[in-house]
Amino acid sequence: MHADLDPSLMTPDERCREVAAILASGLLRLRDRAALASDTASENPSEPVGNSLEAVPANPLTVHVG
Image 1 (cartoon, rainbow, N blue to C red):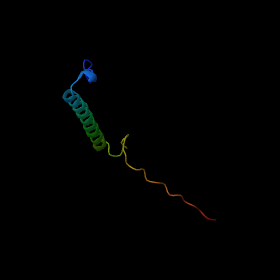
Image 2 (cartoon, helix red, strand yellow):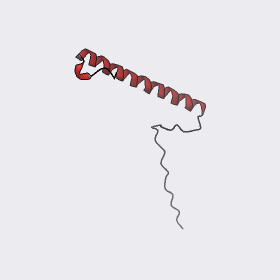
Image 3 (cartoon, helix red, strand yellow):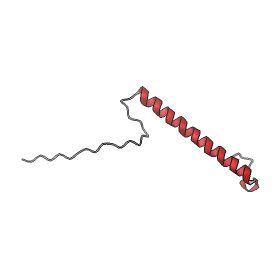
Image 4 (tube, rainbow, N blue to C red):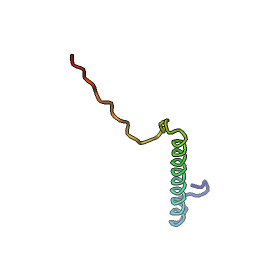
């Protein structure tokens, strides 16, 4: 939000444009972050990506009898 804009003094159209600008800025940041992560992953495929949502495979339990 711009420092000189008080939401209580804005028209509904101005508030809508301000919210749209904030959302657009967030989407661009998200897209840039995803592009950066994919560039890093392609440069170092053996290194895990820090903020990945990929599930870690479970380690099965092994029981030895005897």
